[in-house]
Length: 80
Image 1 (tube, rainbow, N blue to C red):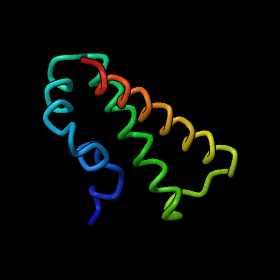
Image 2 (cartoon, one colour):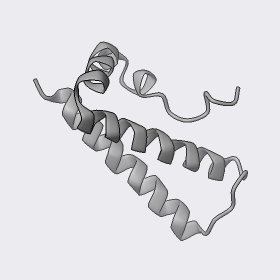
Image 3 (cartoon, rainbow, N blue to C red):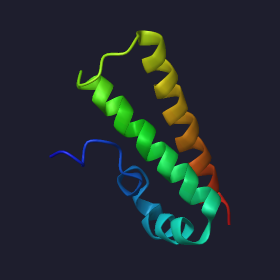
Image 4 (cartoon, rainbow, N blue to C red):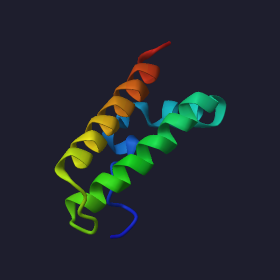
């Protein structure tokens, strides 16, 4: 179904579901990372589904950006 295509962080990190919710409401930095991650993940999905067809280099850069954001989010989830 449209809207459920990109990676949901609660599904990616199920044991951190409550912490994700808490950090999204209490940390502007975390919330910004999540918003950026969701936007990039949505764009990558659109590319993978051939809704958009940019260059391979652009696609690889977006995938790397998505991974870097996910790593930063995971690092914040692991703190405390």
